[in-house]
Image (cartoon, rainbow, N blue to C red; front, top):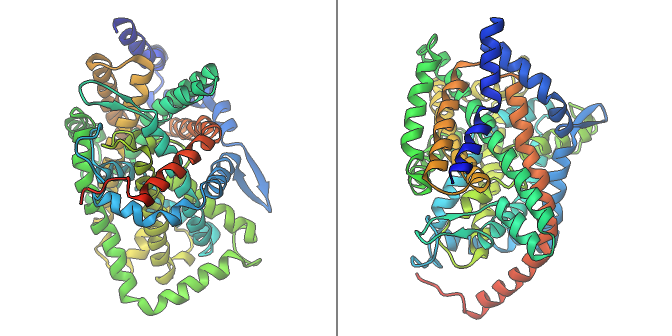
Length: 503
């Protein structure tokens, strides 16, 4: 354990110490130094992960196609499980089949809330606006379609997460792609390949966690709060310190503490943001059919902005992949902590995640932008366009949006702290020392994110985030056959009444 702790500290200081030493000697500002370092050293890696082809004048990253194609294949292979299993999913969340004596740490609802808190965020606020501003209303159609297909990918990866998780004597569990890649492929006689893919996933998960799941979230929350309320304008470090202290207080308690917070904050976020959107849509109910008409027409119109039909399709698919993370494998880590003796039950619960994230929340955001006519406003995109659309109805929405961004960022950060922690302990071993090292590093990076202009750092962490999907999707393809057999067995037992109801 001491050797693993030393290795963990060594990994943490690999980049930080050389950069600080060089900065002191050269007098280069730390912001510029870090940007130059990541841009030069990891630029080729970022270019490889986000390698794009130009279709009809529109750039399309192949990693997006990698994830979307996987979702389509799994949708067909699993017999359109996302549509046939919806009612059973809701019953599971209601606790109808929940045995409190099963191994695990959180309920089905808590696991879903934790995973949702890691995906519902700026992608739903800013990403949708980007898709609509570049691809027009029709991008929403392709975003919805990708979200529906992504439900099958979430079903597959989260079932495997529970099936191959590690259960410890004290009741704790660890699961996710690291475990089903290594253990699942070992069962097929491919232990070296499984181990290599698991290590690749874990390393990329740590980098993605510290960048996209931490620094970027803190940075955006700081920018939004300082601009809206005029506070912490010159003291980003203080905002970061406060945010790090709050996050540290939550994550120190582990997944149970994180789940207790997310099961409260996710419904509150839904009421705050989605509730405001609903009010606008209800007040403009007569325009909803017209808005959907624009969505359908724009999806298949050769004259659509942003590269015609292909361009519109690309914008919608890109935003869906970035929003719900189906195929990336991150959510399987949270879902693996559920209390259940039936891995398939959590797959059913997990398939609701892209539905809520992309089909419901993203669609509502897009409809508000279309109905208010904001999507045609020049010079606006991202969070500014969303804010403009809502403020055209509610002038005070800027304040609500600032609070929503802070809550989205906070919930995303605490969820990703757990993802990163499980990847860390897979590499360096379970135990208090190893876990404490990672949690301290995570909280320090919160402060860094609030005080720096991140630039290439975020480019690298985004690339690491999607690199997780390369290893994960390969594993899903190799394990999907055995999972389909498990699904058929489960459905047969469910139909015969052998799956016990507790309510």
